[in-house]
Amino acid sequence: MRTYERILDAINGISKSAAKDEGFICHLILMMILCYISKFSQVFPHALIAISIELLNTSIENLCDKVCKDICEEIKTIKDISAGASFIAQLNVLYISVTNLK
View 1 (tube, helix red, strand yellow):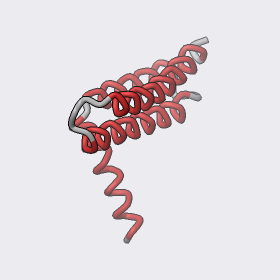
View 2 (cartoon, rainbow, N blue to C red):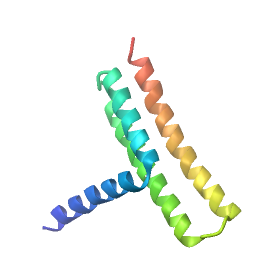
View 3 (cartoon, helix red, strand yellow):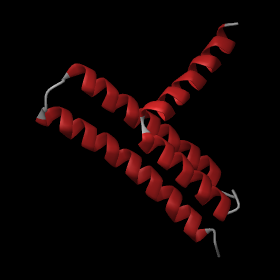
View 4 (tube, rainbow, N blue to C red):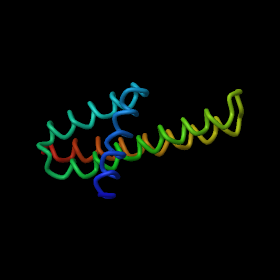
């Protein structure tokens, strides 16, 4: 029963992220397009990792907004680093997609 609840919590978290963060939807659509273009071969696992990192990025940004309502340089740095990690993961998927087009 507990495993079932955890799965539902995870699905709920993904849907909340999709509802709150339009950037997540853009990343999800981009990953699906790249998977389709490269025929899912080696791209799909990397796309899942990139989407997971984007979810972590969204979580970090939401937590930062909760901790500090004002503009704070330290919080901005944390958000930038988190966004950078997500961007690198997405570049990885793009690279793998392009190299699999051969």
